[in-house]
Length: 198
Image 1 (cartoon, rainbow, N blue to C red):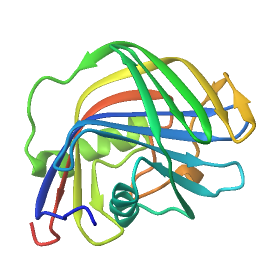
Image 2 (cartoon, rainbow, N blue to C red; image 1 turned 180 degrees about the horizontal axis):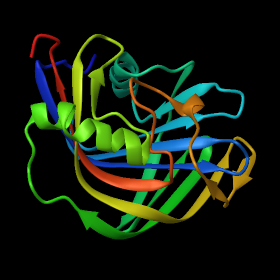
Image 3 (cartoon, one colour; image 1 turned 180 degrees about the vertical axis):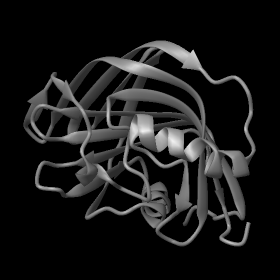
């Protein structure tokens, strides 16, 4: 059974990302409200550039990999532990923990044209990211940022690799039209995905 694709979808949650001293780079998508229910996925860029998606089901793995690019998709049971300022993901490959600090809120709503045109140069300058672009399967996506927090601590144990030293992200971690933020961050975000003609 595949996850149905709708013309307009909004995913509300957090994108939490960090590089590691080992050369690994990780992005956690933690979605508490989406058309496909609540779910968490893990995107892992290995030091050799291999991009891996770890998803909780084949259906969600197929859906996420239709939007972004990976060399490998792994379906794994996941146990998620959250606090207000942290998340821990346990899966078949190992464990990831990330903790962030105070939230800088962006309280006012911005329309899609503002996100795509006015907000975009600031995101590129300060964070090295794009706020709008085209997904792998030709749909449009906007990142409506609601709040930003700097990372305080990270831990990674995956396939025998381990580190608790965070670093910035490099362009080799690009899974889609945008790189993750160049510094370790937890970003509260609404991701708007629409048909190409929207």
